[in-house]
Image (cartoon, rainbow, N blue to C red; front, side):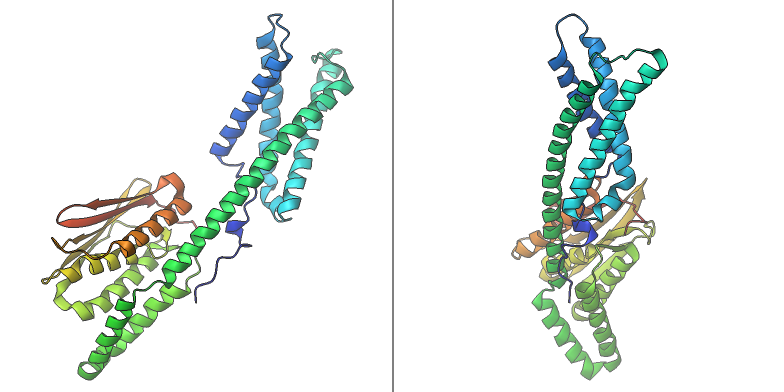
Amino acid sequence: MTAAPDSTSPDTQVYLPDFCAAGTLFIVLLVAELVAIVLALAADTGDGQFLILLSKTSFFVLWLALLGSAIMCQFRRRIERTGKTRAFVISFLVLELMSLVVAELAWQIPWRLAGTPIIDSSHLYFLLHTFAISSIIIALAMRYLYISSEWRRSVVLEAQARISALQALIRPHFLFNSMNTIASLTRTNPQQAEQAVEDLSELLRASLSTTRNRITLKEELQVTAIYQRIEKLRLGDRLRVCWDIEELPMRARIPSLTIQPLVENAIYHGIELLPEGGEILISGKREGRYLQITVSNPVASGKARGKTGNNMAMSNIRQRFELAYGSRASVEVDNSDDRFVVTLRFPDDEDAA
């Protein structure tokens, strides 16, 4: 059976953002500069020295932000292993200690080198002032990160639950039709019936037993091909599938059960409704660092089944693409009068787990 979502898995226990990422670093520096501007405005006495005060404050605050990001980038995973509460406490203490060390260096270095401080306040006042401001800012940041981590955790758990539901969802009509087809083949072609049983067993294993969020493109296409063979036994010449996937790298990673549900929908909502059947086209190509896979099927004019199952499958695929790739992937649907086309576009992440 499909494993239930695990609230203690690494995917659901990300408490702190990835400080090594360029996007996170940009946000940290932007917020740091905004804090510097606020501090400069609060300390401005109107003597025309605002820009000098802002430059000093910005230099100090940006150095704190850069060093803090570097430290968290280096030790984030180790800190998170201590648990949620300890992770935030340790992060707070580490960042606070770093702020005090930098403040002490900012005071001592000019004093040692030039014999005079460049900071217009006493040593103790400067340290206490830095401690108070950094404590407030770090505490607010930790609170935001806690809320953000809880939100991310709930999103991941919901997505995993949807994946489990999708993996467990095999339309009853498909199972009934497959078993009826196998039963009829046992009398006319026992060898083919045995192959069909093996294919159905392999499809059920892939659909119900996988616990990986992403599998190789080769594995996903193999599952789709197995499903096609089973349906081919029932539909015969009415079902024709054209594969044009030579350009696709088979080691690329893709969320599991992505292409097979599209082919299932193409058969259920398209081929089965056409007396003469039709052709499903599965094509793929590489566009730079991105891969594009298209699944299209003919549409029966004036005939349609309920859209609930189709919409649920598309919603699941969109959500899993959003979780896996963020804004780097897209799922587009073109529902014209004669064909239904679904286009998947996602990055070629061969090393993604």
